Image 1 (cartoon, one colour):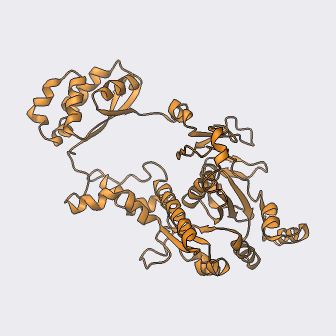
Image 2: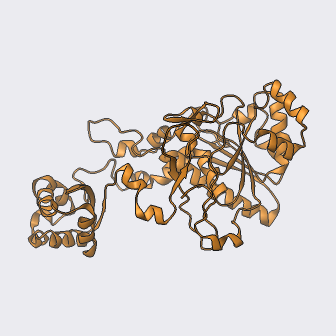
Image 3: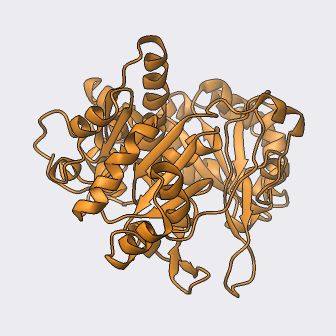
Length: 415
């Protein structure tokens, strides 16, 4: 989907569910930026606050492209900041903090994701925001929370840290082996972002009913523990780490054009698979009477026979044949195949942003997976360049004149 496209134009007349909701967000990296991007896709007006010269830390990630002024814009920033305005504002300066607080009454949601206590030290904590706007939903998203005592409260955190502390790295670790960090990107960030959005929507609903704002405190570790629910639950049932042999199969199977994943977690799945691959005798084989037998005899019996059966089949043909028997499978796609996948294209899940440098192909990022029948998908706007909207926002929100803006810029307060 090109930026500006609207896939379901009929729905435009209904507007979007968050039209009129305004978000002021001092944010960085991925957890909060992903959340506010989703709010923006649902109609909210999002103003992003960044340092006036270096921007937020996500701009310094790699790989990167160059913006129109030749400054690097990193991949983390490029995939988390559609549909926002950017203002460069130095919150370390007294003037910058004053401008921030003066804008607060104009916004419904005021959010930040610095290390716990940072905004309080700047005089911009939840109490200061509530004093400036009692109806504001104040959002703090940090590694370990802002409002309750935690032995980790002073620690900075990235996604990999809270993922590790959730227990999932050790649970999946091979005995005597090392944990594998970041197995699938910023899961801790996106999980926290989704819980933050749920909390924001709930707080807005509460404000509709009571007229009162409140403080939403999101700890990334809490969110990861909720996501990796099997850690706590399985431990209480006597399972410390993934069993070996496991009582299930989730395995890659080689086909003619790559790998497909075969998942067998119930006896009926195993029976269906045995019939499909031409080995109905497996259904009565005592070696497979228990689920752990599937894993114990995977490499010696099952995998060679399955791969012999499907060696001339494509991943799709393999998955089609298995699905008829109720067996759960799917192809292992390459990154290029994901971008070109017809399902994702049909559902506007690939968003293209033309790049301002001479790098060639557009920057691509995932679209909005929330499909509402009476809400338009899109239009998307590209990520903002650093401070691109500073003058427009400050003049509109605070009535600052050109001379006042020039003086603030000369003093390094804005950019």
